[in-house]
Figure 1: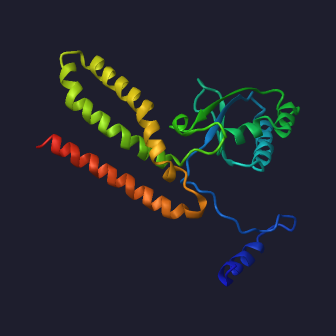
Figure 2 (figure 1 turned 180 degrees about the vertical axis):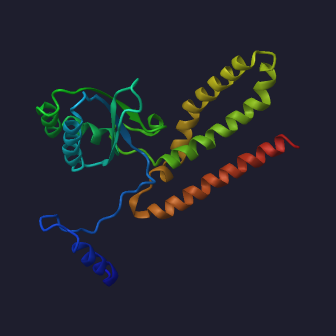
Figure 3 (figure 1 turned 60 degrees about the vertical axis):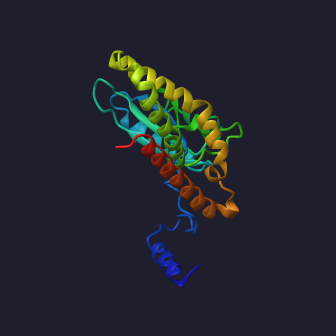
Length: 242
């Protein structure tokens, strides 16, 4: 630890309570790695029980924060009388890690506690945007969302351009919503299978780089995808001259 960092730790220690855990030096969470899974829990809180609910939520937060893969919790108050639900979003890095918390003895004990008994609740899961394309059976985290988005754009752009060039003229006589629906349906079908599978297989080394050469692979992969964007644009600029 550098002298500057040691001084910062010493200054922070002066603000700690006597029984607080010792300060430790560890990497900050990677907030750019947006690959995750979120459990959305809606709870009906009866009038006069808000303090009880918030107290229980604080205890639940403290327990789930100790589980591997935990990435944060957001509690949203009701937005109107028409939707009188408190919404809790619990985010973990992978489905397996989220399930480990949801099925844990700690959570079951919290749900069975008298403090939570009066509340009616239900939950459902939200996967990351393109998670189904990039997930696997081992529970390994999907690539960061920015990589997923870049790969989808790489595959989707030429499909849309080819449809514009060759399909759109044949759909021009149809009602606009029908023509757009047909084009979108074809785009989704082609991107979902087989194009995304091919792109993922070809760029897996960049999507999930080996830790030993991570930064080299990150930069090389980013440069490769940007180059492929340029090649696609140049090709269609030649096919569709101004």
